[in-house]
Every structure is written in structure tokens, then in C-alpha cells.
Length: 105
Image 1 (spheres, rainbow, N blue to C red):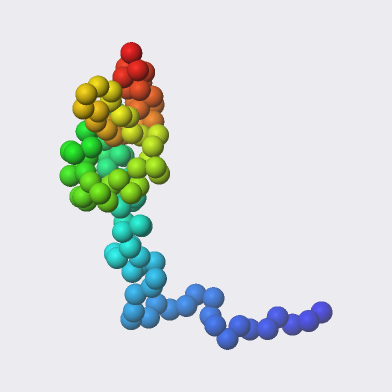
Image 2: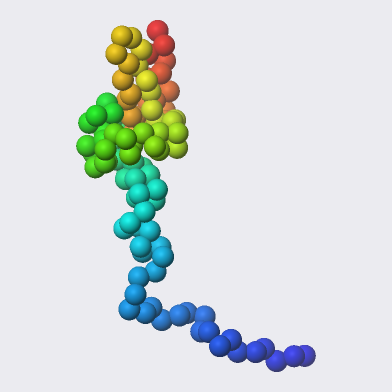
């Protein structure tokens, strides 16, 4: 039976004085920050909905930034019909489905 070798690097590395990549990403990377903010705003909406303009204020970003991530949250977004279609962000997928049924009439 062979004896286990001790690793030169401890299993739990003590935290150094610098920032890790994950810490930097959570502060600097908009591809990481904006989706997290959108998810938090949707959770805050709960069983209610908000038009895109008000929703982007909740998220705290520009509409252009919000637009980049619409596909990730398509289940929560309903586009109204008519002369001036608008996007509604629904807090739950179930609410979005119900609103889609109303809009389709």
C-alpha cells in the first residue's frame, strides 16, 4: 500500500490581499452584472408586470444594455400588439403566459 503524498499547495488556500477573478467579474463584467440585476428585478416584481421603460429603471441600466439580454429572459417578456407595441416584463413565467393569452385576443 502506497503512502499518500502531501500536496505542496494546501487544500484551503488562504485568501491573499488581491481580488479573485470572480470578485472582479461581479464588479466589472456587464455580461455578468446585467443578467443578475435583471433576475433580481424580476424576482422583485413577483406576480406583477412592468413596461420596459420602467423595468430598465428598476434594473439600473440603459435600454440598449437590457436589449442585449432579452433572449435570456424571453419567458418573462410579453410584446403587446397594436400601433405601438411595447414590451412587458412579468415577474413570473405563469403571469407572462396569462398576459400572452390576453394580448392574443
